[in-house]
Image (cartoon, rainbow, N blue to C red; front, side, top):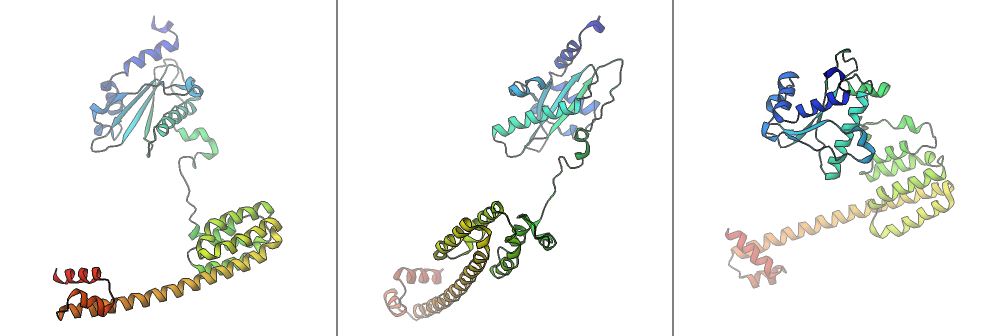
Length: 317
């Protein structure tokens, strides 16, 4: 009699079967023997309603979704169970759609870390054994080794000079080369002059993109009073195009050099002032030790009376 039941009836039966936490725990722990299953807190297992699926994904609503936590861990994860009575060649893509739907809902909730999703297919077919790959990444064919694995482009580690030698209408090598030196004004000036020939090869579109990068990276490294001059130089490049790039580079290099000199002189002056203040404070301490009152110390050192009182209190402590 069961053989006459349509496939959906089989699926529905198994949907009811895994409606309890005990059955779900038995499935992952005693049948599938997941290494982490012993650490599941049974009390945290709860079935999740799958009506969260958007209209676009309504046709791929999963059979059973359970939420659980492992002992000594605050993060939760999902167990996704799909019941099948026939072998489905498209199962990899179908499960991926389930997972995307779940993660999309988590993102809508504002989670910072996406939970793990453990997909399981319970197959109760009689005539044919399951012969579809369980590797979800195989669904992406030639890209399978690069999906769910990211590559890192560490700009500092790159040898960009080889790319600059091509002198093509490409902005990336120029920006990478300058980014490597953005915190060293002297080196940045040298590299700006060095890539001038590359910048003169750029199209109007890439010139505008370079100016956008420069506004956010180079302009903040100038003195505030230099910003208006920088803006005028950049404006001319936008109007005249790559023909004005040589003027832009030479002027920006000059502004960076001036800013570097101003910072150096300001640092020297600040150092001198700090040294003078330290000497004054030491003199004030000696006066306090010799018995001068606060008003006398303030008059002789030209320190604020509050500062003298603060010094006296620190010396007592």
